[in-house]
Image (tube, rainbow, N blue to C red; front, side, top):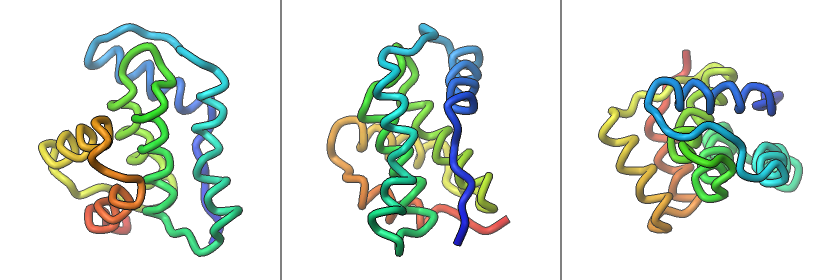
Length: 128
């Protein structure tokens, strides 16, 4: 299957949108981490061709939440990146805001692995 991946321009726009809507400090903390995080999903697919949509979405979410690419808003960007990637590829999240906040906090505190996040996504999406 062919996937549409997130771009640097797109993720920076997502970050700016999150900061504009919810507050915080705008700006990139580490450009190298941004590049690395943006390639996580593509690298996963290259090394594990059987990866599915929820594995790839989890790679983005986990990467942005854990890597602290931006000065502020990394958890919000992680969630937005997962949702954007899923939408670009014909899926949408069905989870509640409370469920999303809970899983993002679990990832941020190290209590949720990338694999567990992928499992959560699998049960929280529908095809458009």
